[in-house]
Each structure stands twice: as structure tokens, then as C-alpha cells.
Length: 88
Image (cartoon, rainbow, N blue to C red; front, side, top):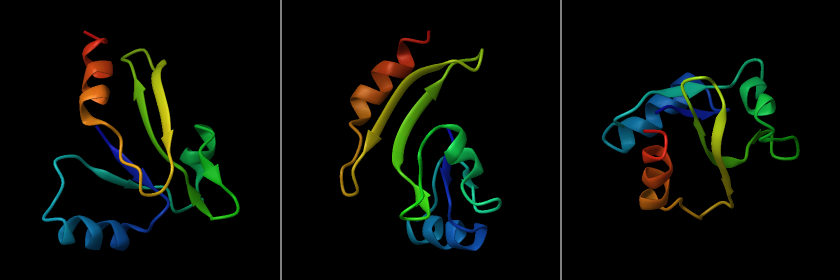
């Protein structure tokens, strides 16, 4: 599991520290701005940031699940886990 956003590395560090840490790495898609987000069709030019999403990629690199979320809406952990379990 990875977290990716268009924030800088120091912003990621401050956010994860404020949360008490995360059990997965946070990656910065800051420069070139949103390059990874653009590759997944998630970059929002108007906001200069990625749209929130959960993407599950299998071992062959095939996207098996993709769901975007409006700000303030959290993904359902049980649904995400069920999708991961489908991968075997």
C-alpha cells in the first residue's frame, strides 16, 4: 500500500507526524507536478492537485479496482479489503 499526493515531502512528513504516523509510505507527486496523478487520470488542473482515489493494481500491473471520492468522503475499508482479497 502506498499513499500518493501532490504535496511536498515536508508537507507529507508534517501530516503523517500529526496523525501519529502511518503504516504505509507516503509518496510525493510534487515535481514534476502531478505526473503520477496524470498517468492515472486523477490530476485536477483547476485545483493543482490529484482527485482522491483508491486504485488497486495487481502483480502484473493491471488496475483491478478504481474508485474516486469527493472531498470529505472516506472510502469504505471493508469494501477495499474485499477488493484486495479478490486478488488472492
